[in-house]
Image (cartoon, rainbow, N blue to C red; front, side, top):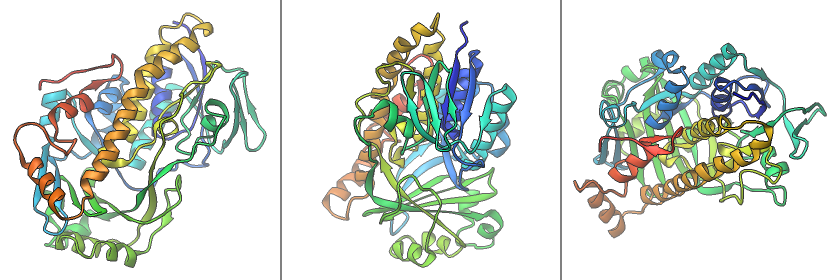
Length: 416
């Protein structure tokens, strides 16, 4: 097996997972992370079966066991009454159908566990390395402090929605601006003890589901994380925040006011929030390419296909990217084969990721309908038992393609 010298720009979830996949194939991997510390903010993230499959293949999933929560279902609810509109069974149904569970985890735990696995494998993780520019032809990374990293065979751009790798080396003819949605979101967590102290909301910790209250231009997604020690809340609403920033302090009074017409359970839940962070909801337009002419640079994750969170697939798709990238590079006999391997990677990944981007936008529209005829039709379709649903999580055909996907083979596997 040929070993390449790979630099991964960005040490978030996608960059770490890609580095692990590449290292397991025998490559030398260095991660250049812009922040000076592990930087994931304290909030939850969903781990669907298609990404759990990859973590198992990498041999790192066992270390996640004591940090995960297994929800029974994803339940979409009417915003003002809490009445269930659509229920997608998760545990044990996802394991039975796709061989892997649907899980919930704290983002900081997710990143830390991948980070620890990367270091154990011998991956070099360098912090405080903010990328200024990438020269695609010499495969050189230039940092903001002037430091240069060269003599590598491949540069992986995993540096997020405002990617410098993308803007200076892959799509240098334009600055690719994120496309904001009409919403931003508050993000908060409440400790288990506080949740259990209030009889009006204690059931949210014991009847373990991902609950999502949907209404006109607003929704609240909430679920337990950290093995039931914390309750995670994401509150989407009309507003603005800076794209690419994840830790702007939010105003608690504004947060409560945005959801004053919601289910009394939601309003009571928000009285227990002591602090909140605010961030924009944005995705990227379809890029002309993920690999430049030189064939020495490639994009993964949000740098290539940042997506709205309404399918909970942003991190999962970044992890799929890394798995497919490692698989295509395994076929290379020398560095001369890298450009064609990267073209194959782009061909295998770009269309799928863009379809999921589109699915997120459609869920955005579907969740946020105003009350009226169209909303009533949506609710009726979601309650139908024919296997088809405007709720993409519950639509059997789409679910099979989404969750049953094997990024190593580009096929989907399920018992549906």
